[in-house]
Length: 65
Image 1 (cartoon, one colour):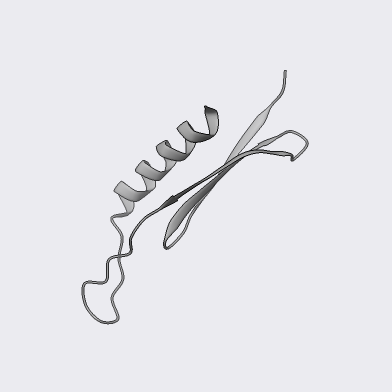
Image 2 (tube, one colour):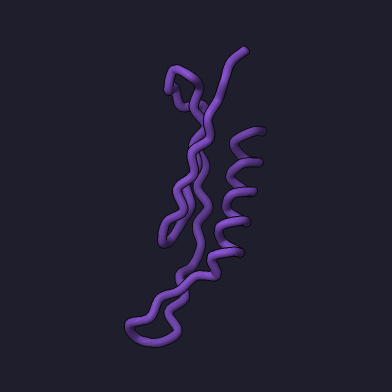
């Protein structure tokens, strides 16, 4: 049975995911872009719960199709 690993990086402007096999061969990649809210000069924020969960589920679905 082949084993796979999913890696996810949630960054400032996008979340990136990769599916690799046990040998480290990249099987699939997916990127989910999102906006950074800047409510005032010098401020930057995300809705971390919404972005993290939404990005994780979107990436996981895309990589496993």
